[in-house]
Length: 315
Image (cartoon, rainbow, N blue to C red):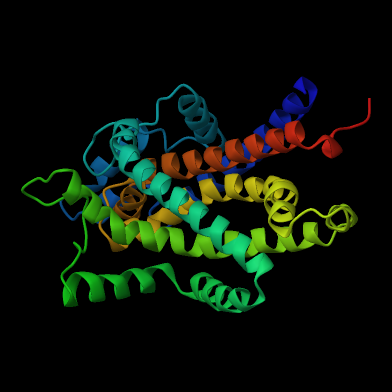
């Protein structure tokens, strides 16, 4: 087990290095580079730009800049935001709770819906047809379009729910916060629930076609026990792997949802930094996203290695 874990960590480290190289190169290849925010300001003199370039080390070769940035990033020194001068880590950490709340509740909702829909559609042909149509719609509809439609219907026309933000400007209690969560949670969970339910349905169908299920059915085991005790247990392992891998992708996908609903999370911070070309924030966000994906991928691989003996190498 330790050997497997160390081997996976050794595979993850080079991948993160490659991602950092690509992101660093793209940031510096963009028009204006990291100083684009100052170049667009007519009040900043050319000599001021040159002084900033020297202070930030942008006059050094690109390779040296990358080494200096990577060493500082590992130490937790992520620099300062070009937009307001605050430490990048502070700006990210203050937005993390809102994103974790949104992604966490959306994941639980998507998981609950996908388990129910996937299980029922695997054994009921009639319901499977309806579930297939719903899943295709959930996967196909753009997130921003679905969010705008829900805002139009439930916030503007019906007035049942708030259209944006995390709470009212005057402050609100738990009910007010829950009301602000409803629409973004539904939008973020919809696509993942659609995909996960289809994956669970396919896994269950595959397990139900195995010989040991036929043998259990021949012994008189009821269909309910076949599905819940035998088939579902075997189908949940690959399903859990997909959920773990998609959890980090959901956090990245929250960028669009948070932007549509003005949710004060890390995703909306990314769009703000992108609009202002705040490259220190963009670098930190992209690297944290890559680390999250790599970490959850490692957790998924370790979980499969522990729970499924078939994946282990013979001793």
